[in-house]
Amino acid sequence: MNNFADLHLHERLLKGLDELKLTKPTPVQEQAIPLLLQGKDVRAIARTGSGKTAAFVLPLLHYCLENPQRIPLHRALILAPTRELARQILQEVERFASYTFIKGILLTGGENFKEQIAALRKVPEIIIATPGRLLEHISAKSLDLAEIELLVLDEADRMLDMGFAEDIQKITDLCVDRKQTMLFSATTGGNALREMVQAILTNPEHLMLNKVADLNESTQQQIITAESEQHKQNLLKWLLENETYRKAIVFTNTREKADFLYGRMEAAQVKVFVLHGEKDQSERRKALERFSQGSSRVLIATDVAARGLDIEGVDLVINHDMPRSGDEYVHRIGRTGRAGEAGLAISLIDHTEWNLMSSIQRYLKQQFEHRVIKGLKGGYMGPKKLKSSGKAVGVKKKKTTDKAIVTKKTRPTQHKPKTLQTQTENSSTDGFAPLRRRKSE
Ligand code: AMP
Image (cartoon, rainbow, N blue to C red):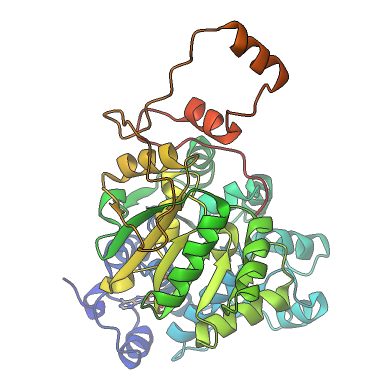
């Protein structure tokens, strides 16, 4: 493999990398950096933890160093879906630019608007922004995107998931003079992402660095079956108290569930923090800082809140709720087993989640280990009969009898769990988990 020195980066950047003791580029860096240095548009599929931030930050810095301007200008714009991810990108810019005079600025919501305007007046070269706050600055005329030369869309798939499609279109239209555009996503995305790639990039080079099936090599994946929500909570408490781990993230599908679990764990004397989209900025930052620094080892989070976070030392992920798609599962599990370290992913599965779990297994082409915790076994161990796909064989409807008609009339839905029914109907046979509308994250 190449060393950074072979990638022909500016010597000030090599000096910085040397000081950070980074010598070997990661695969995404090795592939993307040469293309970006040639000025090509690039669309790359690479997950958080792959070194993708440096893959676009180093070429941006290189460009600014190689093409100095006489007057100060904003030269590069990086758009990111969440404040936390934007902050992490700024940290990377500052780390790699330590031997240069290049400056970055963060424009994200939840921070003082006037202070951001004052900082913009110093004309930092690199702007890192979330779409909403950036548009507020554009409305307030505190910056002009016409001078932007390089544009990066980081985690574009997630920005689309979060409903930023129109905002991104508006922003990219305003970058009229841009010379180069880079789009990074963790997944291949759907039609909306394909349309965005077509509309925004010019003759892009495509890099595919995520092969779903080999994403989790260093992470052991287990399921534990649960008979009820209460049983899941007992299992969660047991795992947090008895597993060996440095840091754990517990994922829920909704904010309400995250808050609920937080209350339950606190009541059970298990120290946890919670992070979701409804927390205000200072609460989110506090929870994250405590988690990163290690004063709390357990974070309960929704997918949106945990998206893109690069927290070192997370070696346990628990899916209290099964994620709703194979890609979402990959994102969650991507938080463990980073850089070859061992990780453990445990999904708690009740009867409504079995088929979803089995779709995800097939999507990943991996088999999860079925673990049983002694003393907490519960009454549900999976479906009695399985189809060859691994899904549950549906219970055949009994012939209608008079008794059945009476039961049906008086108690129409009592014996049919609604979620199981919906899930079976939506489950696809192509190995992809069904897409469902998110409640709230
Ligand atoms: P990212 O995928 O951008 O979130 O990066 C994940 C982590 O890997 C960050 O902490 C980076 O600083 C780190 N990193 C980036 N490039 C390298 C490299 N070439 N070697 C080792 N670590 C790296």
